[in-house]
Image (cartoon, rainbow, N blue to C red; front, side):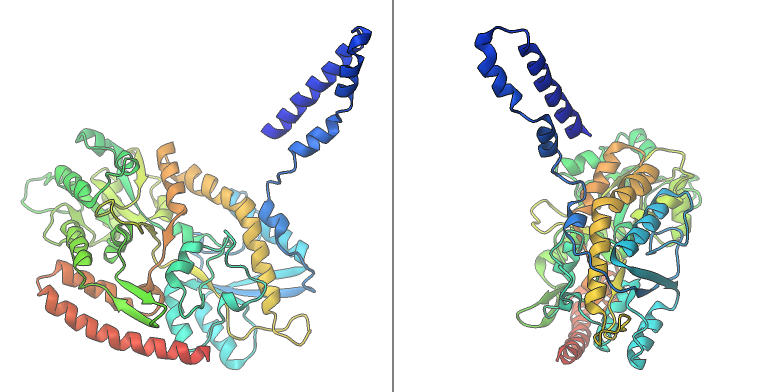
Length: 493
């Protein structure tokens, strides 16, 4: 709109110059002629060349011959946007934007999106085992990927010729974290929104912050002072045994931190460390829990999550949410999408990322907890009857959906669904925007190491000798990691 106004103003100025020249003397006719040669319409066209939808404009749009893209999804969760489509217009802005997006892309590509919910992983497996090809995409939790890959049931997205994973509507952080043996089996494309909804965040109570005269964590973050030590000081400051019975109870007392602890991962990733990493050159996973710096960071995190601390309680998620809603906890650790459960909170609250160990870390990022992602089955159908699986057609469909979402629907999700409904101040809104630009994903969740994080956390916070516990855990890890790599290598061949 601003460009249109500028162009209009310039056009009016030019026209004024033309009119004024009519009353001037003859010696001004050369200058007048020069002014009159400018075409106002051409000026407007030049100013309006920048399109508001550059990615959608550039993406391939081909007639897909009326194919049906069959997608299976996890059961719908009203608290999160783990959905790909809606049945009808409902009046809810994001749902309607997704519905309209899907119908528009269907029309432009001459295809149909068909989504079914429930038993999504079983349906994918049966599709591959039977060779039916009746599932084209599966939208399921990240943690399902390791098992599906080891069975050889998935096609990597980078092997689809019509998919360009370098485009910004394909999540770049996930590719850095989860690409294995050169292959990307996880489809984090801007189609669904759960990989945004599942970011781990800290909600904080503004009234308690003011009451105890504590530093604003958002300001600490922006000034690069938001550290684990700073947070620990705040947790200790507000912790109060209100009824004086000598013990802390989620139903009565004031806590520093409630919610979920996610096995330390949010603070690990903020601090630039990883429990498990992948060495592409060596084709091997590494467990880093015995490295000196990793242990230092882990011990700092454990100072917050230790069961001995009266200021932290994550034993009951529902009671923790109630305590935060009632104004009896300074921080509430949950996923971004949990703002939908905080509408009853009376005190003003803000949103901030998890703190880091220090600002020396070069690989700090914002952790996403086991989000829903797309999987592409090894076997897909041939709906258009050209004698080839519809992989290229599915790729064209995903590129179109990603481009349209990135240019249009994503803004509805961020500005209306999240910021408009869940954030109560502009600083929190800006914090969310910052976090969305640098997200990270966890190998222990993606590649079938479900017990590694919890066992590691138990080692750090428990009474067991950490060194001996780490050595024992590393032996079992190396064995299972080797089995996974062999299976993946065999499936690639």
